[in-house]
Length: 410
Image 1 (cartoon, rainbow, N blue to C red):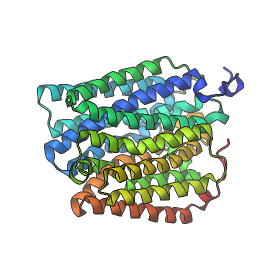
Image 2: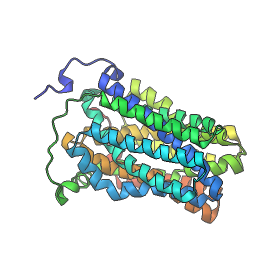
Image 3: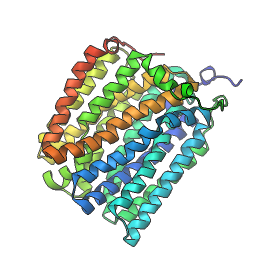
């Protein structure tokens, strides 16, 4: 049996671990590519349809594969080489980006065709997300995991900062350029993962049974603090997420173009990146449960400010604060889930966790689009912000275990 990573001489910095550094670069490359796709797809869909309903359908097209494949995703992540699974997913996403590039270049792009490709991308992302997250505990010593979780979050936020801004800038030269650049970045992510070496024991390729498929759900139900943390994220972001409506805010309310949309989509990640880098250096030590509730409440308040703003600068500031508050709860949730789960179950538990996160993000986009179609754009975002604050108060009562969590130390 190879020695555990914690038993070896470990660099003092998390990024000093070569496998984790390569993981970080792969996550950034894939994330930037995905965010660039999001900008191009959102702008194209709204240009073709002029309808918030279709913007909501983009979120639904990404959510449905995750919802339908959650149990299969967890089984695959626990039974096969996680690096290989992630590489295949990123390769599929790269091919999908090339298809969108071809459609834009030759002019046969349609709303139905875009949605079909988004379903393919959503399927690949459904497998990639939990698999990549399950890799992290095997790349750093256990005592460094809270810092690694913050670094992993910083990779995501770096991608969200750079991706939309680059995508919006490149869109001025045409959607084909954006999609082509995305394909190149997906290939780069595959390359980084190829050179990662881990010390994980060979997975047991036991056949799938109902008990093994549902093991992740059973584990989460047995841990009230984990169930409370991920369900808080689900309902708060489901109600408070307004990113699907950013193309409407950019064009119709704030009166800007693709570059403005790129900045708006980057703003939450800018705040999140700053806080995640801070947490990577100064991890949370005490009162983490109450800190998580406070951060989600700030998320809701920032959503309310953004809803009524007609100033581009104020909208950017409110989105920065929103992102900064959100990443605190993300780091706490990731640490609780990964440190409290045995390695042989991390794929299945991470798949369920990703379903909750995907529900709050992709289904939240569908909810925002549908609500905006019914009540109007500004009322839809206001309803979401108020709903987030109500969820915070309810979860403090339903899950008192969360308020009593003091530390993330293993």
